[in-house]
Structures are given as structure tokens and as C-alpha cells.
Image (tube, rainbow over all chains, first blue to last red; front, side):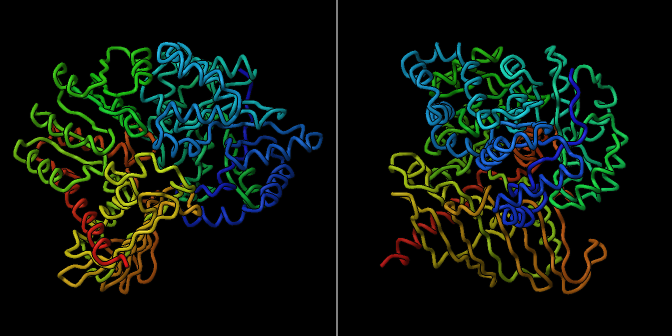
Amino acid sequence: MQKIDKIILGDNQFFGINHMSQEKAQQLAEKFFDINNIYHVYQLAFQAGIRAVMLNSNDRAKDICEYFRANNSKYSEINWYPSIPYPHKYANLISEKGIFPTINDVLLKDNTALGVLGMMTKGGAAVLGKDVIKIMQMLIDVEMKMFKGLNTKVIFLQNIITDLFLGFGIREIFSAYCDYIRNKYNVLPGFITQNMPILKAKLELWGIEGVVICSSFNKIGYLMSPNIEAYIETSDNNDTAKYQLMAMSTLASGAIPAKEAYEFINKQKIQSVVFGASSKGHIEETMKLIQI
Amino acid sequence: MINIGIIGLGRMGITHYSIINSHPNVKIKAVVDTSSLVLTLVKKYIDNIHTYTDYNELFEKESLDAVIICTPPTLHYPIARKAAEKGIHVFCEKPFTTKMTQADELATLFEQKQLVNQVGYVNRSNDIFQSIKKYIKDGIIGDVVRFKSEMYSRTITKSEGGNTWRDCREKGGGAIFEMASHAIDLVNYIIGKPDKVTGSSLTSIYSKNVEDAVNATFLYKNGISGTLYVNWSDESYRKPTNKLEVLGSKGKILADQHEIKIFLKKELPHYHLHEGWNIRYITDVFKPVPFYVRGNEFTSQLYHFIECMTNRDKINLCSFRDARDTLEVIEEIFTDYEQNGKF
């Protein structure tokens, strides 16, 4: 399995996401309302030596991708780690219309899916039942469109979707996702999860290997189900030829001081860390502290 | 093993399925949905599960211990009633019912039959709001004087045709049933049910037939008063956000789902709280859950439901009676607005 970057700059800080404080989240949202402030942080990160970026396929990511594509010659060394989909895009629609009409809307809006509409209305349940994997593939393509032309290393499935399907325990969804990402995009499939030990055990049981698993990993066990002990045991016994582990939320949204947080992380058998920072000082400090 | 059926596989139905399927003592035996597409997929990808398009058939054919009801709200009553007849425990999504007579009947029926009954007002399972409830019960801010309960989201941000269930109050649509019910339930949970509702105003911003924003004043015989303000057409919020502010004789609490700010006139060393402002984050008070989908509180509430089935001494965190009380406040807001809020 191709090795992933050890240090990756995340994107939560740009989009008003903070799992600890909504006030902090709002402050960040205000700061990065001007997209040039986002580009500036990327610039600082690249100057500090970062060569990898994780980005969720939300509306603003489209502009960011466009910018980097336009300046591709300048940023050709940068590796991209997209995560798909942007779940809030679907959440409201699903409440209102149901799952399939929502999928239909999303695909139709993208103009790629007249065939799907026909499948759903004319062919009905039997046809759809056979082709649900095909629909998933079309949704992946819709979400990945914005990343076209960027140097992608891993395509991650967002944790809301991963964990929802994990709860259902459907092997076919996971294997079909991985196959499609490998075959069509020629990159590593990845899953973001808040249930890393449970997901990894399932993937092993299903014989799905060559996967990157990104999960919260921090000293206080925040957003780590079922518990921190299971995370440590799972990473200790991990075969990195089969699964590479990436840690996110290493500071637990700021609850743990950076030094203390990375002292813990550096002791774990983790292959990569994705972190969010928006100042030169924080980026450089984090780069120094991460010694995995 | 506890055998469960899930009725309604919309957004909440699939969330609950995913969560409860992780419980070691639970077996999901059957699901009900009117969409043949959904049922086809369930049959194709999930082994050993029965599917039905009619809940009556589920109750006739399956031997179940409990059902999780996630249908549109108008169906909650007939389904829960049928479950009670069969002696089956019920977890029902909010807003429970849209009619007081039905809520009353179900609350009494399940109490008489001693069946576990719970409604999905999920804030009651949130670690922050549970902490606040304890703080206030312990009297750390003294006697409650005033409060504000607010909720915001960007759920409805453009005009719709007025044909969806969301735009029909009778079907459980509108900002009050869908969203304010959470903020009202939080008041009932933490402060108690108000004795009087006054000053209600409802505003339609985008919706044709229902309100998108509401505010109201809650009064209590013991002198407490508080306000409710809910708006589901506020695009400045990325995610649905609850805010609660409680002023007491000895201090004040400000909170959302992620943090608590506590202002105290005098320090309380036993609680590690000093004079002035203190902050507690979710990272300080969270309890890990065995399996995570969409938030700790969603897992906590369903595991609590299962626990109430196996440990019958356990008091349910959000019973039908509690949800009935929340509905009573909702009805009072509607009535107050009809009588006093219109020109």
C-alpha cells in the first residue's frame, strides 16, 4: 500500500467547524468568510513544509479547488485528500423528501443522471435494487468533480456516512466503495469514522484491505467510540501493510494543550496526523511537535 | 435478546437502525416502510430481516419486545396504541403526537400497562444539558429567576410550494412542532413546565402555511419567568443550535450543545467553580458511547431505552408523560397566538 503523508492540513477551521465551542466556530467562520484568508493559511502551511491537504467537498471547497487548479504549476507538489460528501447538503433534503428523491435531486442537479431518474420511475424497485451500487458511484463522481486535476492520494468517505453504514453492517457498500475508488480514481480508499476499532474489525472480517482509516485520536478519548483503550489496542496491533491509520481531533478541539496532546500521539502507532491551524505560529509548532 | 421492529426508515429511522443494531442485546427483526425502494434495498443487503409495508401486519406476524416509531407524526398515535395493545415497549420520535387528547391517552395507557415509553427529545440525553440540569438542581446558581431558551437553524431558507408535510401543522410540520419542541422540552426538563404562556408571536418567513419563527413568554406561579425564541430560517447558523441562559439568585448559566459558561457571585470549591466566569466544554463533561452515529446523545437515548426495558426500576429520561407536557405548552402557544397575537 502506498504510504500516505505523515502530516496533513485539515479544513475544519476554514468552515466554522469546532466540536467544542460554537462561539469559536463562529469566530473562525467570520475570519474565513474572505476566501483569500484561507489561501493565505495554505501559503503559510506550504512555507512551513506541509505538502498534504484534506478538504471536504462543501460549496466553498469548489472555489478552493478552482484556485489551486488555476495555479497548478505553483502547487504541483501538493497531495490532496478529499473527503466526500458534504453531509449537510443532503440532511435537510432527506428529512423533507426522503432518501431516494434526495439522491435523485442531487444527481439531476448535476445533469449527469437522467438515466437514474428513468431507472427510479420506470424500472422501479427491482432495477434500483440491482443498481444501487451504480447510484453510489454516480454520487461519488458528482462529489469528486470539483477535485478534478488535483493530485489526489486518498478519497475519504465522511464519518456520518461511514458510521451509518457501519451500523447497518453492509459489507457490499464498503467493498464497492473501495473498488470504485481504486479502479476509477486509482487512489487509496479511506474512511473517516468515530468508531475506529469497530470499523477496522469489520473491514478485517470482510477481507477489505489496503484502506486508510481516519479517526479522532486524542488523550482524553473525545469522539472515540467505544473507548480510548480499544483505540490504543487496535493501533498497537495494526498491520500497516493492510491499514494506515490517520489521527484527527488530536487536540480534542483545543481541550488538550498541543505539547501534551502530541506527547500522547507520538507514542501511538499512527501513520499520519491531520490537524487544523490557522496561524503561522500554530502550524510551525504543530509541525515540530508531531514526531510519529 | 430484545427483539425490535423499526417503523419508518426516513432520516431518523436509518439513524436509529444503525445505532441500535450495535447493541449486543438487541436483534432487529423487522422494518416497516411504505417505500418499496427502501424495502427492496433492506431485503437485498440485510440478512434475516422481515419487511412490511403495513405496520398492522408487523404487529400480527412478529413477536416483538419493542418498536421504534419514526413515521410522520400523525401516524405515531395509531401505531403506539396498537403496540400497547400487544404489550410492546415503544420509543417514538418527536413531536410525539400533534393532538393533546392522543398524547394524554397514550401516556396513561402506557403507564397502566407498565410498558417502557420514550420520546426522542434528544437534548435530554446531551451531556451538557444533563450537567446543567444537575447544576440547577444542586442550586449552584441559587433560585432560578429568569431564563431564555433559543434554537436556530437554516432548515427552511427558500419559499416552497406549500405541499410538503413540513408546511402543514396538522402533519407535524412548522418550526414549532419540528424545532421549537426541542427548546420547549429543554425548558420543561431543566426548569419545569410553565404555568402560563403569554406574548406568543408566530412569523412566516418562507413557509406558506406554517411559522418559521416563534417567540413566547413562559410564566410560573413561583415567580420564575422565561422566554422562548426559535427560528429555523436563520442562515447564519451552520448547524441546528440550542442556546439556554438561566439567571439565578447566586449566578448565571449560559449554554449551547457544546459549552457551558457559569458566572458565580461566590466560589463553590466542591464543584471546582470559582467566583466570576467559569467555562465547561463538552470535552470536560462527555461520556463515551459504545457506538457513535451523529452525536453521543443519539446513542445515549436509545441505549437508555433498552436499559429501561431490562432494569424496570430505571426512570425514563423522556417518557410519554414528559412529551405530553411539552405538547401542552406547544398547544398553549398556538392558542395564545390565536387569541392574543393577531390583529
